[in-house]
Length: 357
Image 1 (cartoon, rainbow, N blue to C red):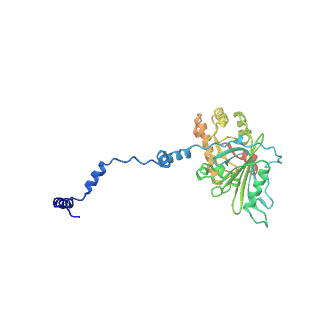
Image 2: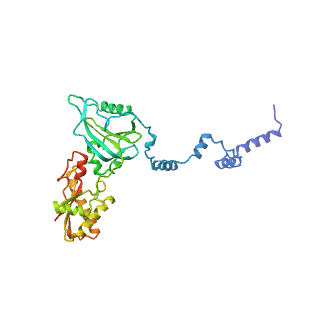
Image 3: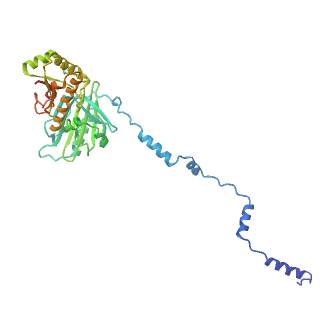
């Protein structure tokens, strides 16, 4: 088809103008985007919305720390069922066949021991029995066998396992030497081995068992709760004078805080009688001599006896006695007056003596 002479020049002109147009630049693209209506925001997924509303890590850590710092619930003996299973004579339980005490068991008429509950110590007072455990001759030691026998024996009469875990170091550090040394046969290696504790709840008392073993030996302590019944009696000034005139000395039962030199308030009336004795005879001069039983380390007992004698002297001076009339001496466990093999004997050996100078 032929184009008319008029149309042909116009087509040529249109082609030339189109070739002269500038290509779109980045600025043009930006302007175009700005002019384009923005799209609606994309919907947020449910999980993402939950994450946005959840507490951040710092808040979660703070809440966890608060839970960790919350005090542990105290042990409640009331949650343990009472057992009326028949028992024999104290200490009620014996070792299985093939196992025996390593040395003579220690039995105390009245003692105090911390039983581990998994959260802290339950301090129990009463009579106690404790010993180290070894295998009998020609017997192969089996830690598992011993533990299984003890567990079966105790649970058969209704005892409940309270804890079986290592005692944290910070708790062990709180124990005084009266516990660490005074119950050395029953305590065991609690620094490195777990302590297993059982309690048998009775209608009128509770029986606690602390048990520790290792690859070659074991330890256990059995304690029956009982109220404290004081046996010490007040010796008045006139009775002290009679003894001093007859023998030159008189023994007093002065009570001190456990493994401490602090005179307990219950012994203040006895100290008052010593003050009265000194006031009645202004020329009397006394040596205050401290003595201990043989429980624990000898050097520790020596230092303890000296400190307790000095505390009694300090009490007398504080009440108006001239310090020049008094002296303090300690003899540790070197001068027993009774058998240290019994609790009654040890109690008698723990004394303060007034000796005429």
